[in-house]
Image (cartoon, rainbow, N blue to C red; front, side, top):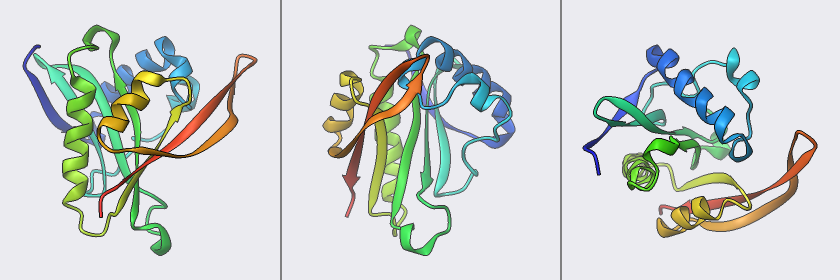
Length: 167
């Protein structure tokens, strides 16, 4: 495996982030809830805060993968105990090198330092078995499913909801 470095991607790096994500939204469109058009004018997905951040995996200074985390419900008091892992993506050129595993591990380690986050939730396309198996290795468990959660190009996709209890 190449030397992988995990660094936080900040909002001021939005152009690099969006260029990388756009490639994924086009080439792996069936594994995302959003389209390139959805992301075109959207702001950076996280807020550069302890409880709202994006991590990037770099291989020889080239962005190879991303994952984001944010507190569920923003500042809503009743939801502050939960967070959401989202926009997990590793470029096809870098798959099979353990990058997704490293990104998830680093995200969990960082979230575990936030004293009032008790649970991390995520959604995953139901037939994305590789992703679900990876999440399960970290202790994520299925807690719900939604049939026809996404409709894209005349085709429906089911989603599974998974959670990891931290405390």
